[in-house]
Amino acid sequence: MSHRVLIIGSGPAAHTAAIYAARAELKPVLFEGFLAGGVAAGGQLTTTTDVENFPGFPEGIMGPDLTERFRAQSERFGTTIHTETVNEVDLSSRPFHFKADTQEGTAQTIIIATGATAKRLDIPGASDGELWQKGISACAVCDGALPAFRNQPLAVIGGGDSAVEEATFLTKYGSPVYIVHRRDELRASKIMQHRALTNSKIEMLWSHVVTEAKGKDFLEAIRVKDLKTDEERDVPVAGLFFAIGHTPNTAFLNGQIDTDEQGYIITKPDSTATNVPGVFAAGDAQDKKWRQAVTAAGTGCMAALEAEHFLTAQG
Ligand code: FAD
Ligand code: NDP
Image (cartoon, rainbow, N blue to C red; front, side):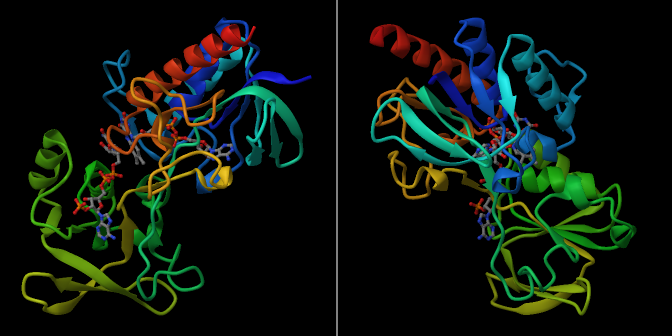
């Protein structure tokens, strides 16, 4: 039998959609992914510590705890959850066909809430088999506590909220923590900027880029270039963390849904509808502007309500 609502993803967008669809008695089936896009089920919030801006938690809540609560709430209202990645969909006719790791099936509507994955910088020395995961990471929260980073100089690349958050987190372990940013002003929100600029353990390398990662078996230094003077020099560091943005997890759609040039799903104005009737998109997979847990949750709610209206209209 065809599912009425298939939800692909497991962050705040997917689980909010599941809560609404389950309470509308649509018996949603949610595929939460198995390290899909390199992210644990639960999504990007599993890679962070304190979430202080999600309403309802005045003291803040740890990212993984919040995602556990989302999941528990989806299950409580009857969502069926599979810990598998959806690898293929065929959207050419309804019901839509999908293939996951060990099973396949059909669905009347699909909500895509596959989020986004942290980008890596392609510089000499930083690839798999070189120093990647030997001092180089894209997740300070996951890897920052390694003994090799204790009391050592560390570096974070980027100028957004993630870069500031990662750098602040890393000051618990190492010092100084350089933020290497290609411009001379941060993209991060004002409160995060203030946090970075007033932390005595954080040192800004404004208008600098990292051109190479150096070390034998583990990272020993980064080569940085001052974009204003073109001067290059080595900066000794034991850890390098990328915080340079994200790529939407939409490649598995294989071009069947309209996206922009970066792969973000295009939705209709004031809607989560895509170019394929019956397919809706929510969260960071379709949002490159706001990218917050609460906005992802908001569009997840919209997608479930729109899927319900679509099914009703189809009889
Ligand atoms: P995501 O959280 O990206 O989750 C998508 C999930 O879907 C992933 O688990 C992925 O594995 C899974 N998936 C992908 N492809 C498939 C597939 N084919 N099949 C099945 N599953 C799949 N926002 C805030 O509001 N406050 C914060 O404090 C905050 N801190 C952050 C800290 C960090 C380090 C980062 C990286 C982000 C932070 N954000 C924060 C942003 C917030 O995490 C995201 O906006 C939000 O998680 C996006 O939710 P989402 O539902 O779109 O998907
Ligand atoms: P952003 O896209 O906001 O920032 C990416 C940063 O990386 C930018 O400063 C960008 O530089 C830089 N960058 C991009 N590509 C390169 C490159 N090739 N070389 C060098 N630098 C590069 O991503 P974030 O991950 O920081 O944030 C994503 C979303 O998650 C945001 O909406 C943010 O608000 C949210 N978030 C919220 C948090 C919170 O509220 N506590 C914590 C973390 C994230 P440039 O500025 O020049 O473009």
